Figure (cartoon, rainbow, N blue to C red):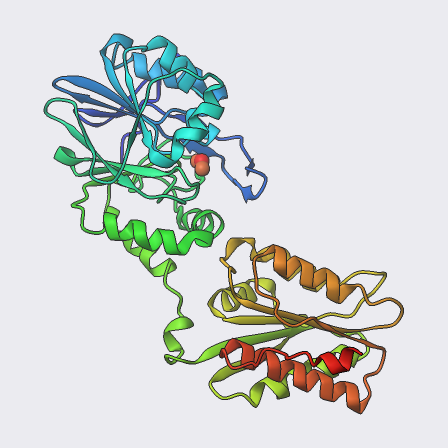
Length: 426
Ligand code: FEO
């Protein structure tokens, strides 16, 4: 049977040895049930912070949420004196990792602070003081602790602009910040000892890292060549067993399966609709028909009533264009459309093509509202949406076909800009 880490002695929090020169000095928060409003935390989380001892200096890597500063300082004091600290590294400035920073700087005023280039303005806002000393660092910059060396990796947007990772060269250990982390609290600390946390690892990736896949891939290009004995993230289990497995999983999650099946030069257009009396459905089918007539556009038509949201989010992430058909009920687009739209915050939609259409009985605001939302999500909405009062006529159905056709042409870069004849305005 494995031995539990001794987290406290006579009630006093203790540092946990990860190697003779590296200790965990973080805190456990088992009662947290919700993180940053958007994340559920079924068994809480941990705020992982670390201390590294070299022959000529001591480094602290990240701190903890302010409410847990007592645990952090007690663990730190169990293995080092404040006057030994020469280096403080912040991989990420969100308050769950910097809550104890102001007090740490007060207790160890001689320590030099290392942050990423992009963290500079945030640090100023965080400390609420104008004069303080720090060193901004980039990929490849190093700081020596004598026989131990820290090397920085610039990994922005994982998941804030400021984020970086820090590599302890001599021990092949990566302090990864939020990257490879998850909200999972277990007193056994290590990935080969804790309960099965795969669900939490995947959930954390999906909600925190997924919107920044492009940046995840760039960060992986820096991390994959590293020899890795351990990955020590800022939340959740400490990855000492097969750390490469987690790097590989990030690579898999950051690749789009659908994209790989699309031929070069081909585009995807998804049309989602929901319909109460069949009118918006008839419009959707006509839009689909019109779009299908354009070569090299792979068009798909989906009724929102027929699926859960999450498969659609995956499809949308890989698509080039998205269209929504919504009735207007009580002056609004309908809930299934809003539910899908509100789930799209986890994917990058920038520059995708967007379009909206729908039938209405009284006022028809739904189409415009969804259009505004698409623009807010940074989609391109090149053609104003189509609203049709109640049952579409044959002429109106033809308008829908033309709308679908024009959208598909736009997607292929083939739509002619509309030329306004001044004579028509007279
Ligand atoms: Fe764990 Fe982004 O803070």
